[in-house]
Length: 508
Image (tube, rainbow, N blue to C red; front, side):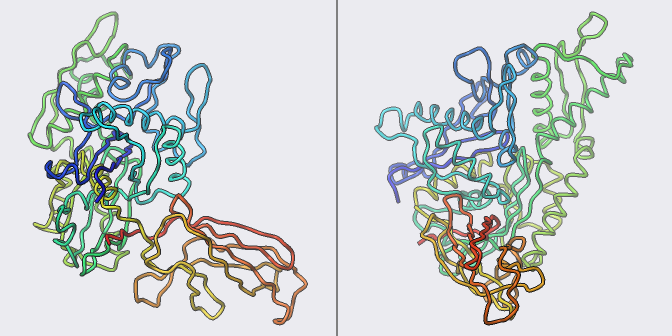
């Protein structure tokens, strides 16, 4: 174990850094670098504020000023930038200026690094937050991972490796500094991670000897989570106010810092309804109509809120069932069920999971920090990601030629080169289909990407004149498999990146 290592949970809504290592064993668990707010320890809001100040402001300060400056000339507030990564998206800032999403994301990483320097563990030491493990959703592709790496580099951070968020949560919950993950050797865990931006569902399994953790299957839903529920609470409270006040207006203007005060009140209402049956929401001087300010004073019951979220909860249940179906498992074959993320605290969500899995459902220890802590553990233990399933090329006889065997580390590596003889006489195109074995020891295979094509000599008609296609396979620094293929006859070439590799962790 390293003396000290770092993990970062870069989230859609909030982000957090954690540290772990032999120097912290007395702490008993990884240390989270919280934002110490007046209301307690909180992760850092993933919000960037561009304005007349010389440097962008990030986190709590940015969120606190959204209401008072969001409509002011020369100010721009960027939230949920994680959703824009890998989509060729540019974010409009101030005065028509535009930046790529990864450059905006770098401000969040820079803020996290600066804040970590002020933490007691690092403030009086020579060590800096530099190399770290960063978590990503299970469905993030290579381009999205690449843009996270670029954002980190711009912020002065070095990426050690990526870690799927559900893996991080599972490691954080079950890890013991002495026995590691031996307590769940040979066991399957389904991680249900529903935060502010996305839902990730992942089934993991630890090998009987405790040396590897691997993904059995995963599924997810994007953009249907806690942030959207806040907006629905706001709309419902607004409808109640209009009905009670009799103002009969389609829209009521929110000026100054009113939007942010309203959003925070809605979020607090949502959180409170996880432990109470009814919550009173009071926001002074929220609306302005006919030259007069109006206070919002409304109540919301838990059953009202759960009805607002019903469609999403039903979609989450379907997501869980899909994940089980992909793994070929029934609920009874799952040993542990772990709930992570703020949205998982909603009683109706837990009830839905208990209806499927019974008493095996548990909430992760301190859910806001679970993912960051899991990343720090992986960094300190120097566990590395690996490819779980055999990956290869589908041959004409229906068999698979292996190019990336299961167990291969998903770290930048030297390339492997192979030659294939192929041609389609109908159109003079060579086709290479990349496949994976569905399950370890199973003969069944499935496609990993669209068929790769290379133009060759259309005049070839005989077997003895088949074109030789040279194919190069390399694991990139973004944990993807890059395939480059070239025709010996024509020199034509093509390349693709395989993103959806099945991840695991080598513990030793």
